[in-house]
Length: 208
Image 1 (cartoon, rainbow, N blue to C red):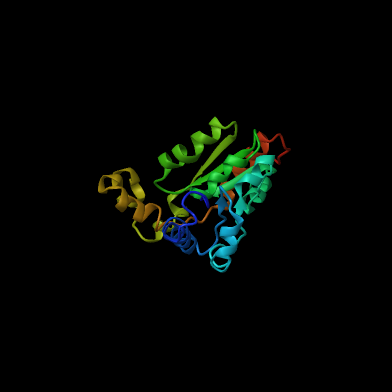
Image 2: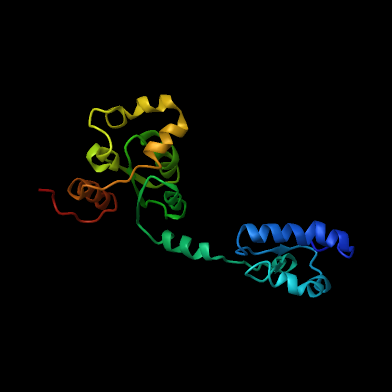
């Protein structure tokens, strides 16, 4: 935000700056960092009691970044950790977006729950290959899904997930995303891990 412009007029100080900052800070429970253009020291001194309560962090003067200063946030440290990994494994979900930070040639293993073949490939499989990563899928069997305990084996939810899409996205999501957990068959999953080691050029023990 800017502390220039009409700052100096108490009406604009509250309506254009303080109230919007309060709303923003409250929405994120004060876990925000404000970056300020046209930084006015007198303005911050005038409302220092208010600014001390809005964010949990000190405001950044944008003009001070002109000298090449880089501000690293906590997420950057985690991205660095991922960038040093050779493999990432995850069940279909937003966490797999961390594949963005993997080094070239790393392996992404996606555990694909029942009914999520297309979104699994569209959201993470295709992008992984496009980014120069090696991609493996582990598609679970019906018995590895928590849905198997809720529906009969011949029920469309288990036997024909594609047919359930006719009920609309919300109904499909309620079953296959919101209600579904997975319990991996470790012996079956072992083949995927062995293939991962092969892709990385690591020695593997032959499967029995």
